[in-house]
Length: 95
Picture 1 (cartoon, rainbow, N blue to C red):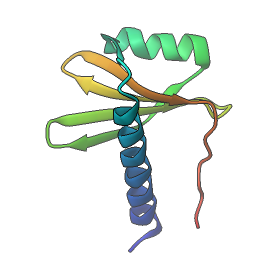
Picture 2: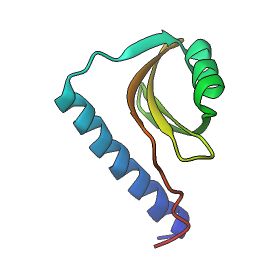
Picture 3: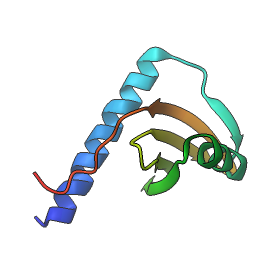
Picture 4: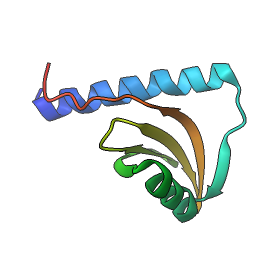
């Protein structure tokens, strides 16, 4: 397995854990037109889309700021629903 493959598997596993935590919290997600949601994250928190995760018809976006803040967004048609957020993240350059 290449380094890139391992990295993608780890990212997918981490996102799965985040999704499970979000389900447990049963919080009502914030939904808005995707361009508006992305613009708000960019303006307020400096977050930019980093990764688009696609599984069948399900699409998630992971955004991240230079300071480590992040958001996980589920994309449904032209809408985005904020699933989870955090204030700290690191880009792993290898294990």
